[in-house]
Length: 463
Image 1 (cartoon, one colour):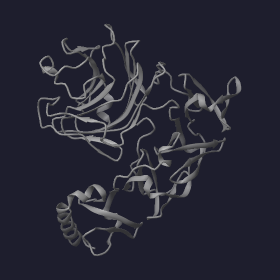
Image 2 (tube, rainbow, N blue to C red; image 1 turned 90 degrees about the vertical axis):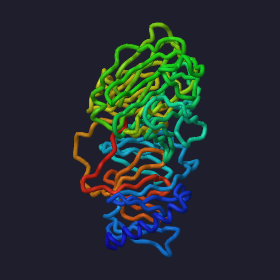
Image 3 (cartoon, helix red, strand yellow; image 1 turned 120 degrees about the vertical axis):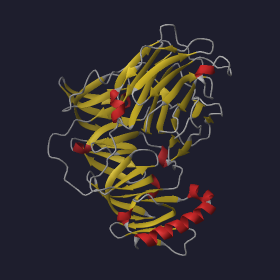
Image 4 (cartoon, rainbow, N blue to C red; image 1 turned 45 degrees about the horizontal axis):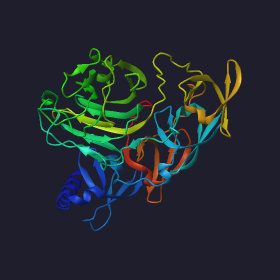
């Protein structure tokens, strides 16, 4: 099919899509490398030969050349009960991230059980981090939709530019204009708030902590506006500055310390944000990508009067923001400065729920115990006491080279890079450089990206 014919076909079908635009929310979206898009349903992929597509207004399937297609976004789908029952997340050395359940581990490999591909046997040299989901109930884990969230009113948090609204798709909130979204997540007296933040253009985001107001506050008019209780505002400004403010209605806005210059943010387009808050200690600690950036102590006492979170995009229309993997849980109060101690890369490191670390060599994980060989000798650690395992950097033979041409993003977060062998409604056949040939359930994926000759791999576990 030549390009002119395809353009005409796509244009015609897009015109029909415009008439029936409501159907887009329930269909797949195919994006071509030249920027064109087409809605419909993926039927089949035979790599190197054809991508077969169905559109409601076409009399039959449409075949496209795979080299002309950049990615496919699948219609939003709810996770099955099995898909929400994973106990841990595994990051591989190449940046892949999978959710599932640990079966066991020995000196050579780890066995990981997933609902979407069964049991995967992964060699130790391919492992990076295994993180266990908190064993105490999560206060919030999402987002899974817009329900339960309060969108900002017409009163904007930023008095310039055009306002908009946050939107939800595929496990994330998106905003490209000034907008607010908030929820009472019932923050406890000691809390840990984590989320993945990605952006395009200048980053300008305010995060209200321990707020009782689910509507944005216009700071220069707060004395004359609606009543609200005290809260703290973490702000990212111009992709470089980070500040923490204590805000009360009848008091001047008060900075906790001087603005921070975080130069590394200007070299990134995504970061993992980790906030740890203790009311009794008047403390708010900020970690970015696992490194402690600042531990603020409020000298006049903790002023947060609510239990809610509010995200405000202060952009004037020049930037887009994505928030995903938002998790709120109780915090044990142990402030672990990951930047103060860099684990020996030649050793495995066990991170305990208490905040302590133990390094050595993991001999095995079985029957609820981690068998660890330390300098002082062998020891057993109950698996329930571990929050994560950082595996040693492999010093031996590298994994065999293989061809990867596809990156798939999971509906529940994370993703995997592989060589796509076939995509059919009953299964996705692929070959991974880390665990060989495997068949995935297509329902596991929210997006499929076709890579260039040099694959673009996602960042590691602390993305």
